[in-house]
Amino acid sequence: MATKNGRTSRTPRPEKDELAVALRKFIRTKGADYLDDPNVSSVGVGYKHVDGKPTDELAVQFTVNEKVSEPEALEALGTSPLPESITVNGVEVPTDVIERSYEPAFHRVPEAATPHRKTRLDPIVPGVSVGHTSVSAGTIGCVVYDVDNHTPYMLSNWHVLHNATGRVGDTIVQPGPHDDNRINANRVGRLARSHLGPAGDCAVATIEDRQFDPEICGLGVIPDAIGEPELGDKVIKSGRTTGITHGLVRRVDVIAKITYRGVGTKSIGGFEIGPDPKHPAADGEISSGGDSGAAWMFRSGTGAATTVLAGLHFAGEANGSSDEHALACLPQSVFEKLGVTLTPPASEEAVANVGYDPNFLSTPVPLPEVTAEVKPDIAKANDGSEVLHYTHFSLAMRKSRRFAAWVAWNIDGGSMKKLSRKNIDFVKDPRLAADAQVGNELYRANRLDRGHLARRADLLWGSLSEATKANTDSFFYTNITPQMDDFTRAPATASGASSRTPSLLMWTSKTSRCRHSVARCSRTTTASSGG
Image (cartoon, helix red, strand yellow):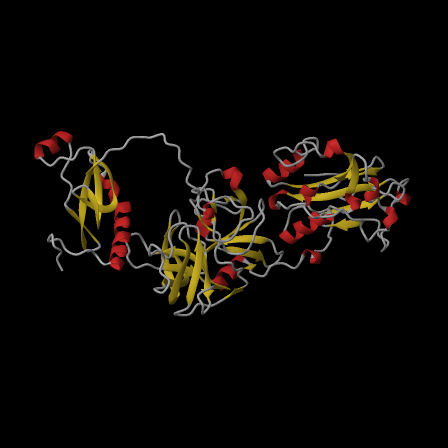
């Protein structure tokens, strides 16, 4: 149908929306080529101008420093004629040329906000940016736990957490280096184990310098079971780059040949996901670079995410392919290879008070011993034992002084946790007679503070349940000694310790991932220490 001025009628709205998407993609991929022309100042998508006024017809819009058409003028400017139309996705789109040039202007504007998924988070959550220090960025899929010791891990891909140049023990950062290159400030853990092969493209890393929340960003679910995908299953994922997208399982029992930089071609098992036409992605992409490692979750009949894990995203279509799809590893194979589970550890009360470990180091470091003169003054617990064991530390109490004769503890700098001390009360140990230990009565209405003997920060290592239990155990009055308030409340150093408290050992442990065995003793006690 023709209009009164002879031009064709306007494009219907749905088709215009589709054309706008295609034009946006064209500009992003081809637009920069036009800027090689010295007279072209910009290229973009806009409404075509007629007689200086905008119409509602979409066009590829150029701005030029000088708008000329004569061959001599074009040659003088060193420019070439711009095309009258450009074909995009089979549609001939008109161009528009406007005379306009640009120069820097110092008008102050707010800085662009970095997307939440690409920022440093504490606690960390699945669905956000993560990576090895030599990788750009991928996605945390979900939180899993070691099947033997219940250590919490971040689950992602081999090519996100390991890659060809990596090795077990390497630093992992959140967000990935592409999103924030402050490696030291963004350390979140270390590579624990990985696999690249038929069972999947997968890896796990420890969570050491942050707390974590296992609920997937934007989906509001915590994975608690794994499933077996079948043709037609509806799935949903939350990734660093494309956010929340929907898909349909369209192939199962897939073995795909994937070429990895520095490694070569590998055969990876899994299943294939295509777009869900009822829930299309905003730009047609159900996944993109940076989504690697995201968890695909099964959807319920209402379209909401369930708590059942369908797969671990690891690949998509190659550049230039119009067939939008994604590939995911099977969770059962991944979990078996990595030795992990979705089942969290038991509550902190279930963690045993194993106490100080004399064999913690390669050279045994025994518990301190008191002199024969002091031994009769050592208090006995209700069960008759002279040594009280807590999580990661042990001690013995003096009857006459009602304070510890010695305290010994282990430090594992490679698995330290960052936990709050808020809402933890100082309490007496019920395993020892109340009158055999000093309580809060000593610290009321004076300048005395309650100082830890075994340093709280030194004890927060191991699995999350261990560290949490150690955090609480450190507040028993048996591990407390009086200190002047201006000593314990001195300004904190960069390590987080009081500036008047020896902090070199904790700093060394944390930065070098070393192990140490430490003891604090009275003059009538003998002890060994090692590191």
